[in-house]
Image (cartoon, rainbow, N blue to C red; front, side, top):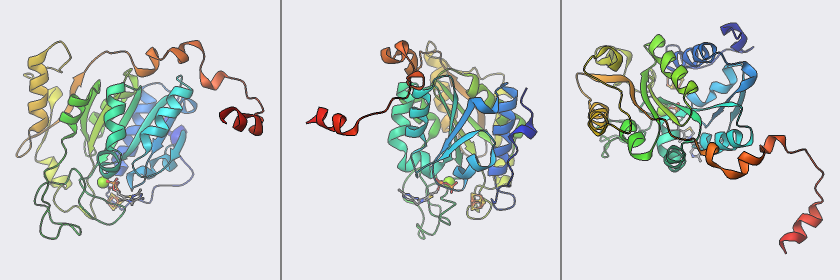
Length: 292
Ligand SMILES: Cc1ncc(C[n+]2csc(CCOP(=O)(O)OP(=O)(O)O)c2C)c(N)n1
Ligand code: SF4
Ligand SMILES: [Mg+2]
């Protein structure tokens, strides 16, 4: 049985004191333990950003790649060795900006991947520019007169693109976030988990105080039913709650659907897994000439 101490790395994170990424890191570790996974069964693929450094500080397999590219790497790992539990983790800039194309197609493919997006509504690592989820009008280094665009809505994006587990958590509510990530790890299919992750250094609007006075959990709202594919009214309600933003902002599981994951329907994977194909020495000249 995996204990939290098994996931402890030799070095500690260097995020700013109070950064929401500490909460995400703790929730990821807690979810791996609660899901009953061995450290050798889990891989975390990340992009580039403050939050994307997380593979350095969760002791399982990890790959910190390129900005916006955690999903192509996660896809390759999952299809090569479907027995692994694969997570992708990265910032809002990483996932909803440069990586947006990968995100949409990964969701409609229903790859069996859990994607945690550290949504601090800012570019943290590059010291405070607007991100795709920054609110309209917010003043940052890159928008001194205020952001002109409206933000991406992750919940509606997930619903429209075919993700089969769509949730939103908050780094300031650790038990709730842990259980959402645990649910994503156990879910067979693409889990999108957007996480409010305060950047205490560069986002002076969306702070812990801001979220503490606004967030409520859908699980505590008796009038809310988690939507599925066969219930159009509940799906509309999930979309409406996803747009709710102001004095009250919901967190929790919005939508869940059981649909075959991409790897389940790929004929080549039914025959053999790439990881099981024995290594063989390739004659590079022969290979090149076969393409001539
Ligand atoms: C292809 C490419 N474009 C731009 C960058 C510069 N860059 C590094 S991190 C980053 C944004 C970070 O913001 P986010 O993904 O939200 O992560 P955070 O730091 O907020 O956790 C950018 C633009 C890069 N490394 N590679
Ligand atoms: S800059 Fe922001 S996101 Fe990055 S470590 Fe500091 S508080 Fe966290
Ligand atoms: Mg960010």
